[in-house]
Image 1 (cartoon, rainbow over the protein chains, first blue to last red):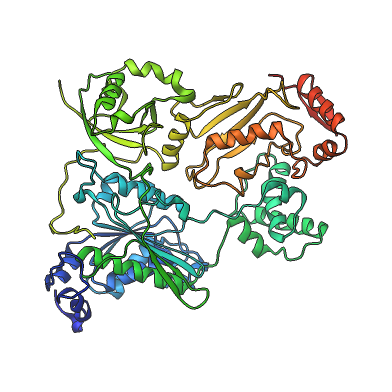
Image 2 (image 1 turned 135 degrees about the horizontal axis):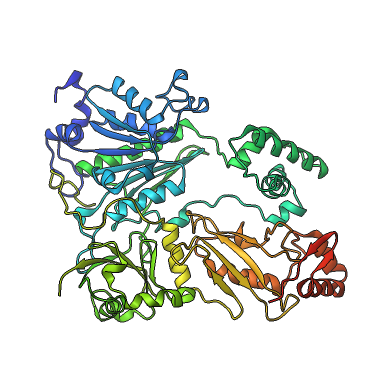
Length: 428
Length: 182
């Protein structure tokens, strides 16, 4: 790689020299730049506040092949912090404009945009990438990506994760002056579903408070939004992007506030409460994206010991960061131990369950009342679905699942956590 | 830390798992666990209107065997978001019932459905909560103010109104409550 004005000089100090705090097995060499530029493929999910920062940081840190995916278009309210966008870009795809801008400004980088929902891409698409960075604002999108990343993970006969199947994810998140960066190595560090409790619940007011004893402007707004709208608009779905809907909620909330002598209902507050908006801060995005990119560089090259595994950042009073080592949840439904199991395709579901129970490696002796699902198909369920799923016990396993390699989800009160079994068909 | 790129060429793993789009959300995975562990009290039933493989929408019928609401059958629709269990299921009462904590639109005032929901809670916890509402209606947190006031001021009339509305149907305070005998 041509050394344009010594642009890689600083990066080479990290990558081409030995050091005392390098990761285990780090090999200092000049070729790292070439590797980053041409061989590593990273995916940046989201091209918003964090996404813009991530793309810029990645490109300037030597990553030469970046894909970016975002379903959103540019809104005028994004321009204060999503610095890759200009007034003339309003209405265009965030992913496309961000990709163009980064390529204009950073020589030699290829950014490939994908203007679509993350759900529109299949597993094969995500498998292409060595590393996935998340700049998202919703828990749902994070859990979706988490499930994708965890789905590549395979376990050996002893239930130990196969390291070569790990799809690392680095997640950034910001909310106002607070943020976090975390490194997810499925099977090694906790995944999103292991630590679901880390995500703050949305503020929810008791319905009866809203109905009978409102004390704040937000109470009045939520009352109109949740109770009065369905009562008076009979069946019409509330659309928070429809201006007339928002105006109606605002006007009604104002009336209710007057009734109870409450001050402070404004249109802006109405929008904030209904859409659950927390103002985004540019500097928080910058700090969090920088931390994420640094972790990406460390993961790929091992040039320094990586973060283990969650850093929180609080900028409300000065600057505070703290790194905590969270632990995996043995009960996790998404990244929990999975084991391969050989079965004959002509075996009945009952026989598969019996094999499970007899298999010490699968923890079978702990099984008491196993319920078995494959994807959305509930093959055999204890509880209220027992009767309707019982006929499946006599059917062959190959008629119940998609085929070789299908995953069975086993829930059982006798297990420490749910178990995933990957079926491997062999002719008996 | 692990060494992810010790082999610099990307390993071509054989496609083992069935590829393509993910077939279910993590919320659904968790719900499968909930449903397999569901322990319904006598008189409480569940149906899945869209079949056994569509768990995100279901109906629970509660038939209290003691208390003021004994003899009635009350249907609740559960709509479980894919963000479950981060977010609670959306629960509505489909039976019109004269109850201080349930309004005429079917909104239910139960703390664990909103402000006190936590991911460790389950579908089972909500069903217990709903059963408890019928055993111990709470006039201090009213959603139906008329019902709450009557319960507080004249418990005997309240009891009479509830029983009549369940067995024969009744007009109470300008609204009609059709019979809902179990």
